[in-house]
Image 1 (cartoon, helix red, strand yellow):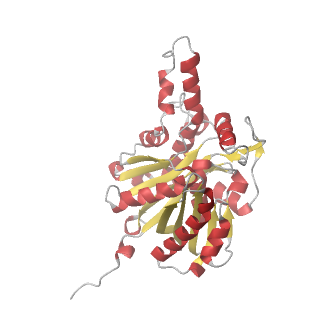
Image 2 (cartoon, rainbow, N blue to C red):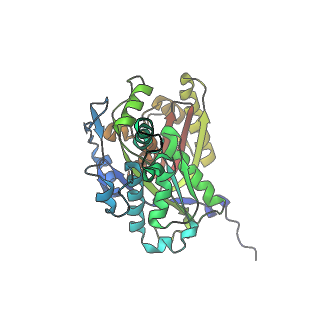
Image 3 (cartoon, helix red, strand yellow):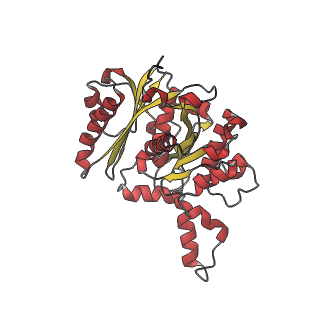
Length: 349
């Protein structure tokens, strides 16, 4: 008797089975979920820079979150990432790292720590000699510092990747993590993004947008992505059904690109636009999304609550969708003004 053929999409379903966040709402997934549901902005007077307001993780420091040992030279974005990964691992228990070489890390970033890069460069230019800099601070200037330190700190030995893609970083990181799993390079992947607030980053954002940027925020969100068949009793919080990305050459082309991107993702998912129950958006080109769906959907918007979190924005949007409490298809969209758009379709059980 021949066994029934099961579609590959079912056998190879990739699911989010756990997540955590360190955000301006506080420490942990519950604080973030409660904050998004409450819908109350947590913007406060900015500690420096051109913006009047900002959203910082309250009372956060590397030593306070991780202890004094090993954190003397750790920069803020690395501490945010290591802390977020640690909270997720604590929730999942020690069995998750029973085979640490089969666990990967894919972490998104903007430019790494802008403050560390600029401080180190300034020291090289203003010191008595160019090489009179603190060598212990140099690792903070490289883009993969947060991802590498997260793995070292928590003894994760699988593939380690840093993704940088502006506002789409979280979606691109999720797509890359899915490729690692489907390629057999890992059994599960911790995937997400982190961003820090600093006066240096604030001025760069201000100058780059000619003063049009909104208040900035910071934080990190990390998800456990694994095959549904290998989740060891963990719940299915969301299935990753489809991802799509497109480019555009002129700013006016962003709407058309996102509209087609959404339609292509829904076609890949074999879904009707009417099946989408909620759209988690970065606020860009929402009209194009509504046109692709043929209606105005229920929106989830994180930026008005926690500011522009840059590289962490899409990961916060993913977290908002997972924590929404809705059942059905969720769409997460993003627009990077440098010329790319993207979306992810999630199936929320």
